[in-house]
Image (tube, rainbow, N blue to C red; front, side, top):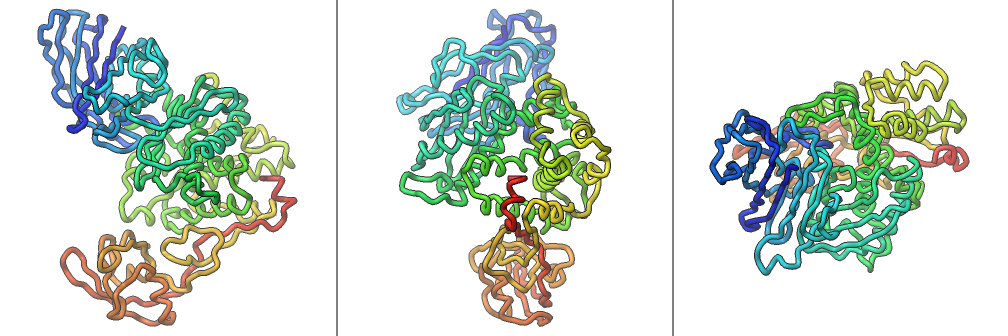
Length: 585
């Protein structure tokens, strides 16, 4: 048996202590830590946070550990009994790594637990220990890991069938709010860590409906218990799927209080995030690319299929919130328009295909720079648009007999439930079978860079999709009472004494004037630049020229901005025929 033990030993220094003991060590036993974790496709080099690693045999004699690469060690052991001890520095307040201070502790196993190379398929036990100190006596434990003597939400002994399962159960420690509900006959728990005033009854009622829609869609839940682990912060957003839980980060104001009756944009976004991560229980945790069966976490694992696993999931996240009755039709169509707008505003959609975007996730998507909008397209957002095209095509050509739901059910039955990975044409084969025709023309869109024919398909289902001018720098898309006729050509944010340029669109007026990402624009025609540059520019006429002053680093620069008419790039989708809409929604 391989035994793991972890304890927060110094919350103020952000240190976990980890101990691994085995009586089945291989000769010259190797240990390594993942370079990345499933669901987040970027090499993160978690091993850089390991401190003071050492080993000893059963007699307490030191065993030399030789580091063989950035994340691997080899023990110079002579016996099968071996203990390895080390500390992990935990100061990453995200869903991906580990974080520890005097308020809480959180960790992913991929960031903390070394694997015994060659023994990853063996069962393990895990001892979760409390931090020492009176101030931590009220701390509890939240994890979906299987109990093995411990009581639910308490420190003690847990277990996992193998290393992959071990690192797929993140752990939260601290004083947290716990709320429960049942969906599809399965207990679900909501854990909120951090200061908040959330109406947990309302949140659980909404999550219950969202979960039940998904469980019914796939014909049952693939777990016996599920956990929403939520870190509540002042301003934050993120989620990561796991086999029986999800780790979430949300803003404090995103959660409704008992005094709020209206649904805020932040709460709607939170429900969409929960829906997205929950859908991953099937789509990517169990239905997954063949390249991920099994995962190789030591280096990049390339696949061209992320459009299906993140794009289709992104299509369903808001759609299921709608099906659950948490938003109305007009709101759903606005949410759909928001995602499409992120694509239509980026010239990168003409430079990169969906398959290329998927393949290059490790660098171009996860390491986006200021030129990303000019160079890449997101397999999340454009992938969701392609999923919409598939759904509407299936519904239209089969007169409502089949839909993308049918494809997902087949993927679950033929692949996910059987533990078989999908290849590059698995989705295409299922769609072809349902439509009874060759669909190479439809799936050719995965390798094209022109815009998808969604306006025509949406019209078939009683929706009018149009493009309008953006109203402001913060306009996300959808319905708007105002628009702006002037195109500035750069995204920006307010800073002290001006605005900071975030990125500049190729060929835009801002670029031609000389502006670049990172510049601090301070004046337009000798007047201070404000937080709505477009409205400021509307005071002048199209084809006029205005003088700009900005700082680049500590150097004052100036240039002339030739005002151009805005090009419609913001998506609006409105219902025009409620009868036809029902054939889709």
